[in-house]
Length: 255
Image (cartoon, rainbow, N blue to C red; front, top):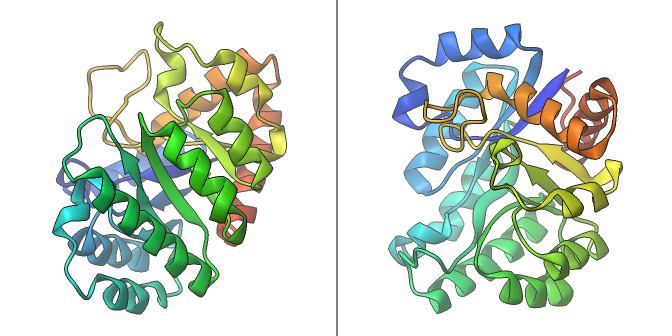
């Protein structure tokens, strides 16, 4: 039993054939999916998908790429959406200093504001990080203890992992673990089983042996299998633990 804790199901590459995507996920042993949003329009679409499909939960949030385009009333609009019972978290928020589609200072302000909103709502956060470890460590050590969260598609360094675990956060791993270039095996092994999650980040980061194709939630089983192998743990143990962790973090029962 697997739960894909991060998939962009409102993306046209998945939304256009959602029924077949869901069927393949079920056949692969996937019992739940967290559909993650990246801006206001995407949040609306993601919640609508979750309302139609009982195994899908939704998040609402604004990705750091879109921080500069956030309207003045974004907080009120996300708050209204978050009252829907299908919504289990705020995100995808965070920091991305690689592409810098939005200025870093704008990203930081919006990230902090979304952390505040999550705390107000009593919801966890789904956090993106790329080349922003230092700022994320500082934020986690300052305010991360006031909200629960997950660092999605974890590829950060030792200091970030330590800060996240100290704050009681989770680390989620995606298709990167199947790539030959993956250099985070030691950090993957240091994540306690009680803080471990798996995801696809669909339609991105398709795991081997399907790398180069569009990703989808069914492939979270491949990610989980590789995570178990790299941690020298039984696949069933990792599947059960990551499912329990997802249910705990998102306060949602799938099993």
